[in-house]
Image (cartoon, rainbow, N blue to C red):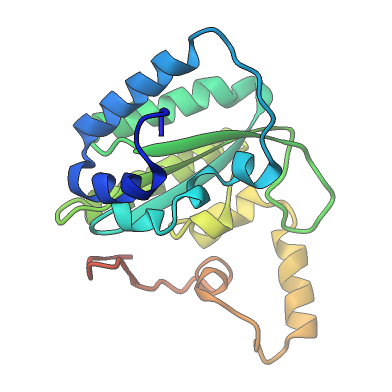
Length: 213
């Protein structure tokens, strides 16, 4: 890490010293290092796209677990909206500790997380007293994304409502019609399906036992 800390020690150090202050310092250091004279090197596909997976057990850096969120915004709106989202989270004193931006293109699949734009995925650590604030913040971010005609990634969300999803994903009704036709007994379902297609809430537990709906 930064050519200084062995990967085997990163998780150990992170669990003991990770905080808003230390992650701010890490971000400043990375920004400084990345803005030096560019160095070109070849990197394999997995290392580039799944950076954190190079650190075995990296989720354990978060003592109480963490909330993931990823949104996708059209190219012309992305910078403005992502900046707005970050400022909102910082004002709420729940800044992201890790984040990544990726480029996407649209496709014709039924409920695909895809449009011509940038996605912004980030992790926010849970603490012993911020679970309710995090829930409200994620719901507010989802509403911002909906109003800007963006998408929220199902695999990294537990806060989208039925009404938000129906407006956000244009093939919502078509998917539900096919689901009801070919799975009449609803053998295939998940918490995500029950929440956004059946309007059923559930309680999510973090590794430390903290709960939020």
